[in-house]
Length: 198
Image (cartoon, rainbow, N blue to C red; front, side, top):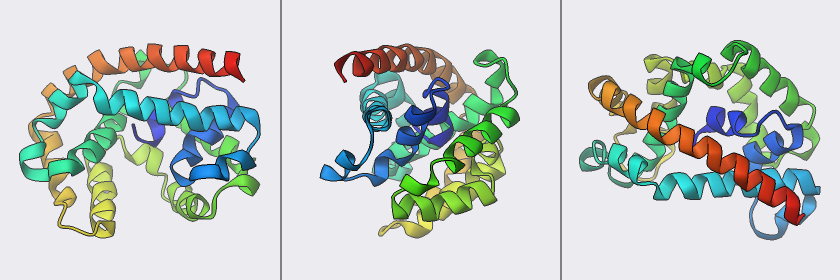
């Protein structure tokens, strides 16, 4: 899952959200540097990613992409799902997506002192260029995936992936709706389990 989905799946819990955002930048024993609730956010992020990567509906979506993009298909579908989450935001939340995104930035700002350095560097640009909102536009998807393509060691062709979104938008949207409801239920249950074991 990409950043907006992880924010949504933090269920308005401040430190869970922070952990959810920094999780990919916390390695090994570094996790011991964080308080329990933030750790739960880190663990939740990892569980969400495992659930997503192994889900048959997600794999079905990736089948449209794999012939051209290979293993980068997993990254691309994560970004596509943020696009559909914004496009259908009113189905999932009573607040506007703009208000939710601003609240997310405000929450993260309050915890900048615990950001891993690599996340802090990325977050500066995320907020400055409002990545979270721009995932809702095909042009924003193009820019995001082009930026990722420049950072890959191999020719990922991700700068062309927005064309697959345009071509298969209806198919991906059906997959998104069927999958994301399941993911939301899974994330709520997992967060409850993590809280009961801490």
